Length: 77
Image (cartoon, rainbow, N blue to C red):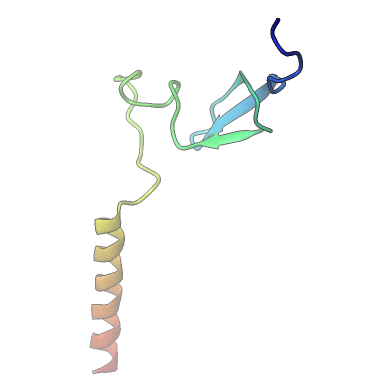
């Protein structure tokens, strides 16, 4: 016989992406769950929608930091 009450309880949880889309899934975790992209906003599933990239890559963050440092050094000289 199988053991009873060994599986976690599944409940409805709201998933929100950074573009404002929300949908409901079943999960064992507490909600709401926040994700960067979902099937509603990802360009692979929606090729006709053009999405602005919200998060910056490491190289872009570094380039912006270097630009700020160069501006600061120009002001101090």
